[in-house]
Image (cartoon, rainbow, N blue to C red):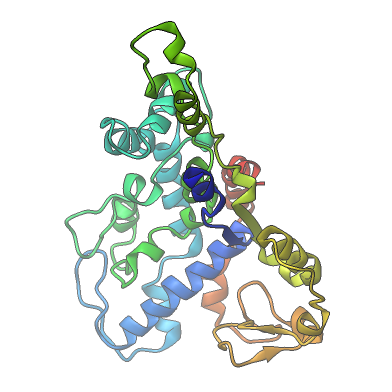
Length: 332
């Protein structure tokens, strides 16, 4: 009974995601361009070659001479991720070495099972991989703090890479692979029920094996695993914007709450839209179309150089679509 109660009260997780490509562009803007400009203007910027960058220059100067484009950072990270996440790649090896060698580790059985399945060419997108620790390799260089940027630094030694919040800058693309971090939670809720024969061994007469006392213990070790769909619900921000009432109805059902008419709430508008306006500012529903995916209102004037930095070529778009596809399929 205690274990049944434990399973019943395992947490419910609501994962809020968005289109990974528009998310990546937004992340580049807010986690690379903005902190880079702030650092450069203050005179604290350092090039990839380790040289000081003069402060108090114009935005145009810094955008043209010292910032990597989205395309440059994206291609560099994609090359690293493809190598790390391929079957038998560093991602699987690191995860196995850290979670699959000691039988007292929580995910030991899961990693062992994955390792056996990988011998039959299981797709890497279905594997348990600790993305941040396994793939994003630190260097000893303060000016070029991640291994994925070494070639970029050689090609563009005058541009800046050393910024705060490296965990965000390093993973402009990787943070959109939602299936990998969620995969660990899916595994928690999918761990098979214990095998009673592995936990109970009866020594004695044949009659002793069928005693009521043994029956209770057999039941303890035969309780099925939790259903992951009952514990993890994925919500897309696009659905929250396009059909908010339906999205909220799904969340309500998932949480087991009574039905509620969200129209009076969703018709008012949305909070924290159009850049970092904060949660005390409402964007009216009729204004939603005026905000693009990066929080820039339509008609806003961006410096020409920043528009160039944000540009995505057809080649990169195709690469991103192909890269994200198997992970999105796993998620939905």
